[in-house]
Amino acid sequence: MLNEVVRKRVLFHEAKKQRIDKSDTYKDKIKELRKGLILGLFIDKVVASTIKMNEDELKAFYDENTDSYTSPRMMKIDSVVFNGRKNADDAIATLRSGTEFKWLRANAAGQAGQDAKGLLDFGGSILSVSSLPEDVQKVLSGVNSEDYRLYESADGYFYVLHIQQVFPPTIEPYEKVRQEIVKKIYDDKLTQAVKGWSDKLKAHYPVEIYFTEF
Image (cartoon, rainbow, N blue to C red; front, side, top):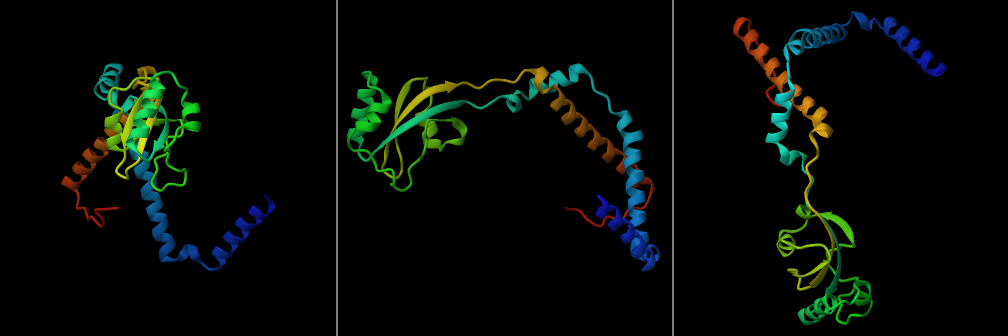
């Protein structure tokens, strides 16, 4: 803390000694700072004060944008990978007859080695269906918990997929996302209001545009 206090005082003393406060660069920076402060105060006191929202408007936005507040369809998936289709078909038949998945993985013949290149790793994890490759998504279409599906990859591997659990999409309640909606609508309205004031100023005062992209 002492070093920080000393550093600030030494910096200020040296800046005065070098007459930095008299330089054009310093003066320009101060002008820009003042403009920024004035603009910020104008937006806070004048523009922002005109922005109004009501509960009906918030709920209407929620109803129109439910996709944005809906969790994706999730699945917990495990897999066994085979080199040939027959072994994979036999494995699914065995599983559907009541064999435990862990036992099958430990004992089934014809499995691809763990060091095989290009294998997909499902690993018993909870995954978003939309994050999976499209051909896998098609295989999983309409599947239920504790079901099995066969997926043949482009690399020639045959995956026996154990869909342990399916989590359907769920919509977050309005009360939970209300503040997020308030911020979204407020920011949109503020942007439009600032643009409206900008257009008014351009109509009455000369404006130079230095940048169009940032």
